[in-house]
Amino acid sequence: MKRNAQVLLASSLVAALGLVGWNWLEASPPADWPTRPATVSPQNQSGASPPAASAVSPSRQTATDPEDWGSPAYRQTQLQSVLAGKRSLLPVLREAEITCRFDAHCAGWPNADIARLPAAEAVRLQKALAARSAIEQKLAELVQRTDRPLAARLAAISTARRSVAGEEVAQLLYGEEEAQIRFTAAARQFVATEAAKLSQKQRQEQLDTLRRQHYGPYFDQLYRNESSEDRLYWSLKVAEAGVSSEEKAALRFQMRRDYLGDAMAQTLARQDANDRSHAEKMAGYQRDRAALLAELRQRGDLDSDRQLAAELETRLEALRKRWFG
Image (tube, rainbow, N blue to C red):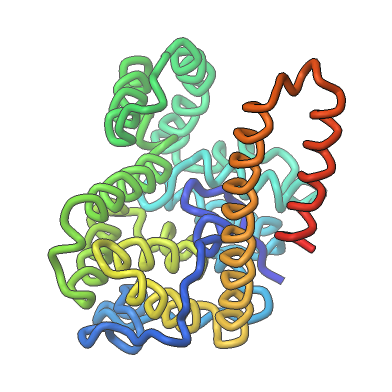
């Protein structure tokens, strides 16, 4: 079975699906909402949407099988993709580490495989590997505020990398990662500023344009790395910008069904309803608790009056039973 060999910075299933639900049974999508959100894949340049993932356990698509890395020809192909600017060296190394760890056919990776390349190409990769430690040391000294915009933080990191090793080496090592973060930053900005001004169809089209623009030469690989959950996350983000609660509910259910299947969409809708009910109960309990504390504090000091403190515990227990059973 194929397994993902990279840890991506894109949003997880929890982030994509852990949204507070709305009463989706009473809502309907906006008039301009397409049956399936438009998206672009390497195989379909026209903008057709990807197939819905399994409703039981949506899995991430990946470009590699563990057996592939045991083939010297396959490893050479991956290194040539790095040299051609379609992959980056660090993700390739991570994939190989995971799938080749116990495979004797991978002995000597990556140095032996790099040595089989033409001399000039081997030197490029060897130079990149040699610079990695110094780059990481430079980044360890870089201090950034986490509340800075993502694009600004990436720019500082990118500049630091290139100050140590130059543009070519930084691109060989980190090109995929930086492309993915650029897309994330651009998508966030789009959601915050422009998405609400567009029709639903235009929003999805612009999201795909941003993906293609910022993934650049790494588009094929990064798109394959995206799971249905990743795509759902961003599609929901742009779809929900500036719409009413009722519209959000309908959009969320429709898109979950498109990307994850009807069974999963129904399950998540029930989870949303449970979460909403719990949140309402918790809000009621906190409100009544605050009122109780205010009442008892008017009667005395809860820290020193044991009788008053005991009354507080008794009445709090009654409140918990009232709200939560």
